[in-house]
Image (cartoon, rainbow over all chains, first blue to last red; front, side, top):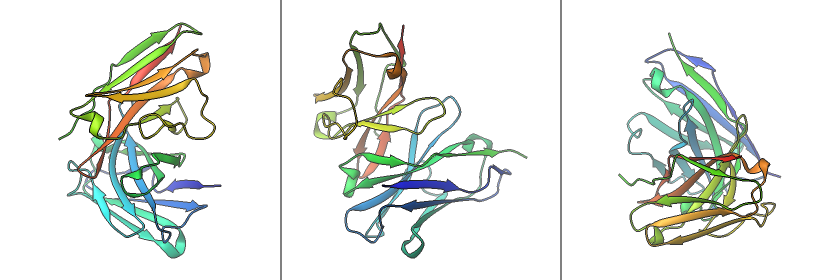
Length: 122
Length: 106
């Protein structure tokens, strides 16, 4: 059984850096064909993908956020860490991590974390 | 940047068929996925590779992709199918989501 869980602060101030951790079980990012993505949903708005990392350590970022986002994996801890700099109130959203298989996730995103609501406010 | 366009809302009577479209340039050359999102829950994959259903997804969910439009069809819609539905595809090795469609079962 695959599980993922996001953790991090519920509240950050504008201009601060957000660090979120996705802790997972049931798969390993050292296994060929595995990847983890980050997706967010601002209140009342659509899902937005913005980062992913593959078992090869290959990384992809959304063009709109690539200057502010970094994704990294810690295979020994079964974690993926996301950092987002210069947070703004428009970054208020529920942040999800999700698991997929293969490059371009041919399987779709098959397993999702419960999500974490991050509010950006002074 | 690549965009996927969905109708904001679709209404359907119980037992009838709901059709949700997703339009994007040369979408037929890409694989489309569909996700169901209910309030307070995490997204659930209902279709991948245009028409494949993950295990556990009811047969009433089906998908197709032709030309510039991918389509999610819910046959015999049930009240439990009321949710937001998002299409997703890949462009230049980056993921793109559509704007979402709210399906209301009246």
